[in-house]
Image (cartoon, rainbow, N blue to C red; front, side):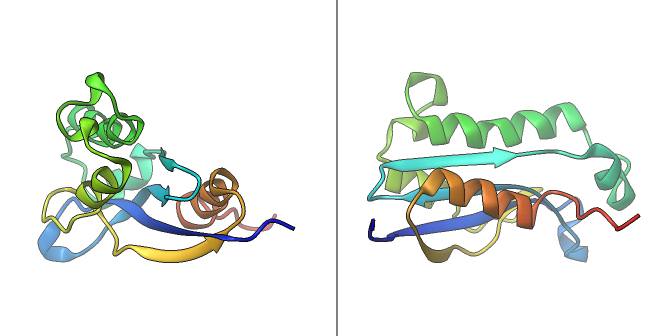
Length: 133
């Protein structure tokens, strides 16, 4: 049986009005050093977000959220931050900020497969919970 690896994750949130502290979870970023894994999954549900704020520039917001995915992937196309190590990129992406796109505090855990854990966290923390019919 495979030993579990330590991982860290944070939830990516859109906070349209910082002063009101209302937000919508739009993604999860997960880092696992042992698996050399840094990835995020995002999903922007504009209709749900419009309930909190109907005056957002959704094109700009989509570009900002997509930058998380580019930085996770690393390389030349992700700018100077994307050239840093995985650990440094994760720390930069999850650093506290008071902008419209923020992350939660970083949470640790143990997993045997970082990719599967990312999918599970995304499903639990971002995707809509469907009501029984």
